[in-house]
Image 1 (cartoon, rainbow, N blue to C red):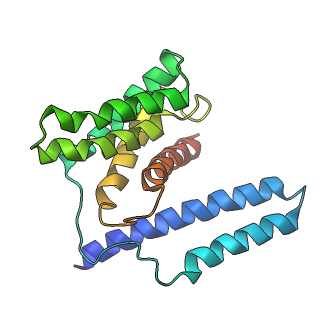
Image 2: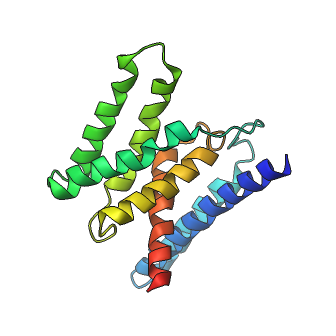
Length: 186
């Protein structure tokens, strides 16, 4: 039970730190123009996050996604990246093609629970693959980011239920983590 609580705490803390860092960078960028608007925005976002005590971010059960489903996150990232960069379709069109094709997978065998779980995993990977070439310079970077996003996808199955943007946040976290590792290795 303690292991599950530690994993849950790590996931929530990781997402919170990345979001605060992202908001801080936005404020830093806007600092020259109007600091009061930036600080007021950060204050309102913080109050919204911590002020709503009725926001249930997770259920009391501990559940993790199966590895057989998680492996589709990097596959979705690779397919979207190839469509985006190699074929030049653009990030939005590439992600929408991958997401639309993924949505038809459960129709192949309607009784399959496994196939019903694939579209969110593939679409999460599509969010990783739609990054620009300046952020994800190679296919290896996308594979690594897809694997990290897949790990976060696996441990966040019972977290942030009903909160919009979960898949995009997981993909963002994977790309940021690999970017940080890449930056630290230079």
